[in-house]
Image (cartoon, rainbow, N blue to C red; front, side, top):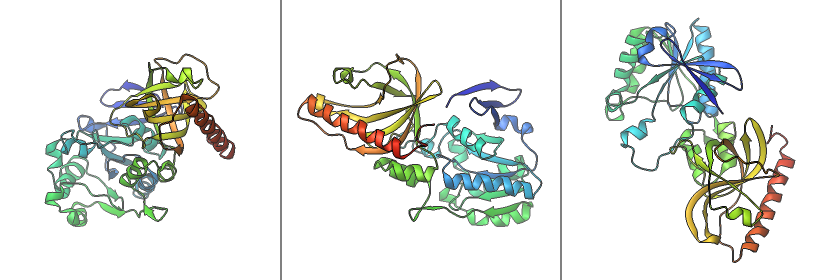
Length: 337
């Protein structure tokens, strides 16, 4: 997923190369460029999962009913990253460009990106709505997700939003949740699934294969000695979440072309290396890709990482892993497009 960024007069424009479509990312400094009396939804939209997309598609329908334009309001940084002062091991499902790409596919042409600060975090729900939604934007409607709450939880007045809507003259609507395996879909549930390596569930909740991007860098080159050369990947964004350690069936996109592959996330205990790495073996591929940015899409978790008694025992397992991947691709025709 590669983006070209163009700086417009008062707003940033992201052009999605693959679809040749445009989404406008506004800031508060560009408020005069925003659609007037829009219908809005507020959220981080991390993952832009099936629940988010239901909200965004409903936002477009709601706006059409009110003869207005849809506007998604989000933040440049996840609130948890700001409120924790960058500490902890919280990770994101999407980078900002990834979020905006998927939001555009839902029909969203305008996004207001608010710089999230401790001052913004201190606002209660009604204070946020009055300052941003009413005074700055004069919105025509507000669409809420089933678990969509904004504002400072310590000063929670979210139950007054409907009263504020009545007095300020904007319509309000709430979207229902979506279930997957009897679980309400949420970014939190997807993180939990990834953390335990349940790629299948995570992908079903997302509605697409979990993916990440990174640069191919020099590694220990152990794979070459086993006839299983690997590309070592350095993530573009260190905040991007990795799935649980293990061996995965993946697709790799290089210069816009997809390839079948398998991926190791974690250490190399057979070679006494405890350093966690992300490396991918691309099937029937021999090109030099050092320095290139490649994208990985996770399809299926094959097994845990474990120590083998000999390098040959590891090779035997890698042969089995590759066969398992090829069987997966044979039974999932749309895995590589």
